[in-house]
Length: 509
RNA sequence: GACUAAGUAGCUCAGUCGGUAGAGCACAUCCCUUUUAAGGAUGGGGUCCUGGGUUCGAAUCCCAGCUUAGUCACCA
Image (cartoon, rainbow, N blue to C red):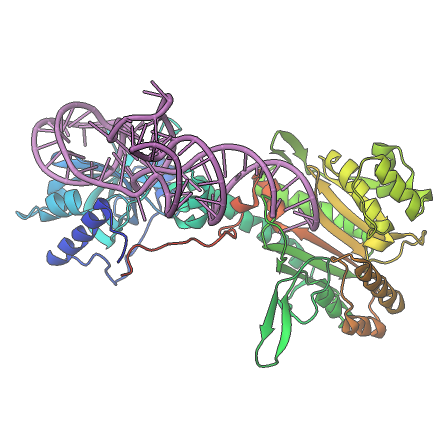
């Protein structure tokens, strides 16, 4: 047995059937020729009334106001909405008034997709509208749409239930047009970055999503199994080690927009799959990469919003370069008063305790410093700020600092108190790299479940020689959240991960 | 994973002390009209998230579960 259809669903199915009986296919096959878009008409017609006198347009019926021999409706296409004026004797010039009286008035519903031929005019109320001469049913909607009404910019009965919005994004996109804008901007951000990299001559590449060793980051991977090879494979947590292999292979600059997968918690800023852009450029160092990063981000900000300053939540953030650069040890000194440059692990451990930071025995020196920074400093950096010179232990893929044995040449870019980008002078000393991997192994044995695995082929690649290289990774979801002032990652992903629905269908027997 | 809150008509939401399930929009029938969330009249529409329990009686109180959101923990 199935759950019964609602009254409105039954009526719509009957309407589709009646159309068929009238010889109208509710789902016709032929293409419908379109020669205009709604917003284009609304923009251009008021300036030149000779335009759009033979317009052919298609869209979804979003509202109807049926009167006697003449009615109004609003259709929505891929870019906007426009009003239709439908007069009985225009769409039914002959004796037979079925198309108006029956099809339009009775059998069409809000949500149906129709094709329109007619001419543009302005109503007495001053609204640019299409005077319909011909109406074609293009697709019958048999499930009622959540109705959103709007007057004077005020929304009535808005479709706001987050569960339904995310599960049925298609509905969200239909009835909440502003949702579309965020996703258009997301694509524009990616295109701006891609153009920027291509202009510099860097090569967009693709590297494996299924990896035998989940490397390049510290995170729990999703595990799968390859049947033919009978081996475990992991969905990538990062693509870093593969991109660096390509630098070894001789490319001067490579980048990839990488969908990464991490088997960790979900919240408003984390989704199990997320997008990261990583770029590696040979013969550069991390200072060069800071310049490059701020140039890129400034460009993105301007291309998205036409200016560098953006409101994020209740903060005003300016992406105009140059960005402030602060050593991690300076940041910690400033916000905690502790000078970590002279501390050993024991001293750091005690300092953490004094500051009320939760610590445990598995934490090494790097992790302790990371905790202090994360707890006491990170949230202070609202304006774009490069934090640089990270402790060696927490950066196993980063080149040792040119002046200090305890540090690495690494920076992260913080915006609005959150990490946005991460970059290094890449470690290209194969002996040091193997040593660092082995350090990670020790951390693992100590109980750190995020420590990295050793990738011997990557070490072998470095042994052949990798040029000095700087690499940078930036979270695309997070960048989109900043650039569009969206507080939740679910609003910058079309289909955020959710628990499966128990029942989704009421049609199957 | 922990805590808190929410889940009632297609949508947005009320629902008093535990006593026959409500409104607006949408839908149906009718009236009227170049309308602007059109208006008027009438009407249909409910697994009150699920399962237990308390009770003469549960949308309401209790317990468990499911889903979502927020906060925290982990992480980008």
